Length: 448
Image (cartoon, rainbow, N blue to C red):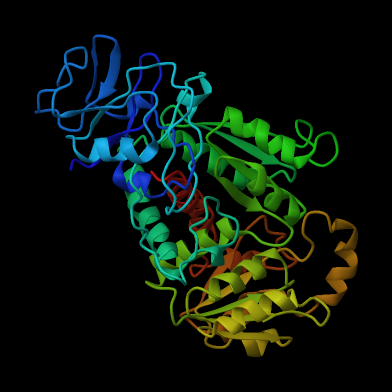
């Protein structure tokens, strides 16, 4: 049987998708795909479709039904339709544009796929296929999420696959190759309850370089939970866009967006975690150290959302993670327990920075007062005395240690100018890698 299946029907269009794509669709889900993404599309009398093999002659659907075409009458059940496909070359013709009862996927596959622009033009669509076996099939199988909300939602193989994809796409972009345009015709809504130069530019530029169009929605454009309920925002934006990225305060906002959106949602930051940043950090470590596993990462400062994401990464990949902070500024205890209970990484929470950094591969710091905490800045400066990452602390860490900072930095507060400008500082390659890591994340959630 050919690898392609036709799955969309309307007055003039039939769209195809691969078995691999269909295997990621859920029971009773509708799978949409833009016909323009397939190079072998062409028109016959009364129908426009794509053929899997450009060298093979495509039968004329206006003629009597040849053996190589599966004809599905409007009343055919999903099971019968699947059987019809199985007996054909992969071509499927649904001649009636008045198909009242959509065909749906048989139960047993993984997750729903979001509507693309072709669906938003009012096309009546439906997916049909025999269920494909999930790679994670079995009683202990974990459902693959459509969103990117927490690093530990994914297993080690998936995280490494995303990071390796980031390296590949970065290489292509750096070489000037503009032929890879997987997001052509796609749009992404970017919600910014918290403004950020790096998050906006890295997502917007990355999505553009891969062919897409990103729409910025600032604090004055959208006020989830105030002017409009989050569930309504999720549904409206899902109707206009292929993906949503959100940078918000309350973690519940990103969870609600993902719950009610029918398109993939990417966590651009919450007060609880910052998964995209840590994926960029991991990518930077691979480039400069050669690995993440069996390294020692020492975070010096407030036990904030950055620390939480490092802890969640430590629940997936094995390394030694130390958070050194003043008493009372430790990370969330439940998140620490998640990392420790995974049983693969060594986790330490300490209060002595100069002792903690010894032998570190990475010394990492962040601002002491995050956005929304600026009224505490003076109080925190008093509490964090002795936690400034300076040249002396980096010397204690050793010549192998790299300095990382997620930016923006308050030079002279949590990090000195000399430390951030030193040869072993990889702060700015780290910042650039936000775009490359996020490109790979977007490709993953979009199945591209």
